[in-house]
Image 1 (tube, rainbow, N blue to C red):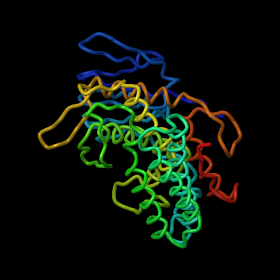
Image 2 (image 1 turned 180 degrees about the horizontal axis):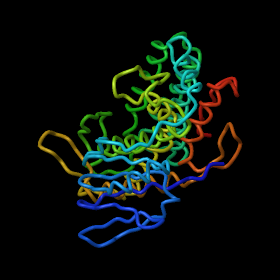
Image 3 (image 1 turned 135 degrees about the vertical axis):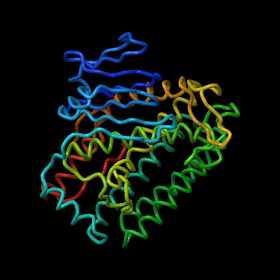
Length: 342
C-alpha cells in the first residue's frame, strides 16, 4: 500500500523556501524557522507572498513533489510540475472512455457514491444527536438521498445523471445548517454560495474544497491520468474535470466533516474570519492555520476501504481511487469501484 506523504503548507508572509541537504528549509526574515525531510513530502502548498529557490523547484519536479501557489482566498495561482509521466496508451483509453456515451458508467458510480456519502454524513449526525431540533428534517433528507442515489445508478444519460446530482445537492445543502451545533451568529448557514463565499461556513467549505482538489489533481498525475479529461464534469478550458470528478465521493467524508467538526467543537471563532467590502468572507491567517491542521489530522485517520478490504488513511483515498480508475481504463477490472463511506 502506498505510504501517505505529508503536505508542507507555508502560510507565513515573506517566507523563502530552499533545499538544504536532504531537507526543505523555510526561512523567515533571514532565519530558518522550519525544516521538513524531503522524502516525506508529497506536496508543497504556498500561500500569499512566498518565494522558492529555482534549485528547490527543480528538485521538487524531479522528485514528484507537486508545488502549488495559492492566493489569500485559496485561489490557485500557479503550479510547478515536472515532465508529464504515464503511459500514453492509458491516456488514449481515458480519452475514449470520457466520450458522452462511454463516460456514463463511471459517472454513475461517482455520483451515486457522492450522494451515498453525503447521506452517510447525515446518518452520523442522527446517530450522534438523536432527537435534536431539525432531526426530522435531516432524517427526511437522508431518505431522499437514498432514493436519489439508487436512481443515479440507472440514469439513462449524463444530463439525467447531472439532474439527479443537482437534486441531491439541493436537498443536502437545504438541511446542512441543521448539522451545525454552534449557536454563534457567525455560523448561521442559509445555503451554499461561492466565488466568493459570503458567510463563514461557506468560506471554510470553499477553502477545504481547494485543498481537496489539489490532492485529487496530484493523484491523477501520479497515476498517469489526464486531470482535465473527466467523466462527469463537462470539458472547459483550464478546468481540471477529472480531479473534480474524483473529489465528488470525498467531499462529505473529508471536507464537509472537517468543516462541521471545527465549527461544532468551537475551534473556529468569529475573529478567524475577514469580511471584505465586496461581501466576500475569507479565513484570517489564524483561521486558515486552524483549518489546515484539522484537514491534515482528518487525512491521517484510518478506515477500511470498502472495495480493497484494507485499513487505509483517508488521505490516501485520492491516490487509491485514481489508481483504481486507471486499472479500470486499462481493462484490469470490469468497473470503476467508487468509494462508499461505510
